[in-house]
Amino acid sequence: MDISYLLFLQNIREALGSGVEMFMGIISAVAVHHAIIFIPAIMYWCFNKKNGQFVFFTFGFAQFLNGILKLSVCCYRPWIREPRIIPSQYAIAQATGYSFPSGHATVAGGLFVSSGWVGRSKFRRIPTIILFVFAALVMFSRNYLGVHTPQDVIVGMATGIFAIWIVTIFFNWIDKNERMDAPTLIVAVAAIFLSLLYFKFKSYPIDYVNGEILVDPQKMMLDSFADAGRALGIIVGWFIERRFVKFTTDCSWGEKAARLAIGIALILLMSKAVTPAITAAMPGHIGRFIKGFVELLTPVMIAPVLFIPVSRFFAKRNEVK
Image 1: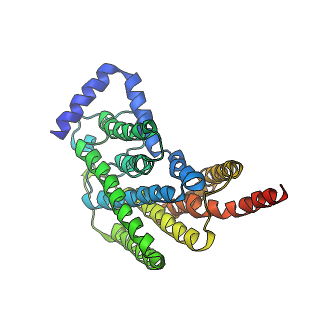
Image 2: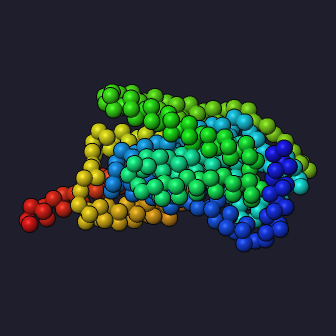
C-alpha cells in the first residue's frame, strides 16, 4: 500500500509540473538547513532560556533516536525497493542514509512542533499554528517527492513527539533534583559513546547490484555519527552553561540585539569555516561526530560565554547613566 501511495503522488507530481515540485523541494530543504538552529538559539539567547533549552534538547534527542532507528532497521529507500518510483530531483541529494524513519519528519517534530509547543502560551496563536502546519508540510513533502514512505514520516514525527514527552519529564525532574546534572551528564555521555560502538560493530545488510554494493553501510553511518555528536554537544553545553556561565535573558533590548549579532556571526563562522575544515581534515565517522558536536555546542555554550563581556559592558553603561 505504501508503494501504491507513492506512485499515486508521483502521478500527481508529474501532472502538476515542476512548480509544485519545486515548492515541496524548498519546504523539504528548509526543514534541515543549518539556519533552522536559529529558532531555538534566538529563543535561548534572548527571550526564554528554559524554552530554548527545551527545544535544543528535543531536537538533539529526536535526531539521536532517529540515527539509532535508521541503523537498526536498515530500510532501503523507496526507489530501491520499487524501480517504478522516480525520486524528485529537488530531494534526491538530501536523501542520504537509510529510509526509516524520516530524518526530516523527525526534525519537524523535534524542532518545529517543539518550538510551537513551548511557545503556545507566549506566542499569539498564529505563529504556533504556522510551525505546526510547516511540520505537516515537511512530512507530506517527503512523500510527494518520492523519497520516503508514509510509515517513514509517521514514525519520524512520532520520534520527535516522543522526544518532547521525554524531555518534558526530564526537565520537570531536574528542576526538583538540581544536583543530579552531573550524573545526568555522565549517563548521557556513556549512552552516546555506547551508541557509537553499536553503530560501528553491528551487522548490516550487504546487497549487490552488478557486482557493486547497493547501499554502503559505512556511508550510512555518517549521519548517525553526526546526530550523536549533536546530542553530545547539547548535553555538554547545557552542563557547562548551567554550572559555570549561568546567563539570563533578563536584559535590555540593546543587549539582546548585541547577543543576536554575536550569536549569528558565531554560528555562521562555525558552519562556513570551522565545521567544513573539520570534515575536510577528518572525512570519516569521527570527523562527522566532531562536526555535529561543534554545531550544537556553539549556540548552547560557546555563544553564552561570549555574552559575558557583553553583559558587563551594558551593566557599566547603565551605571554611568
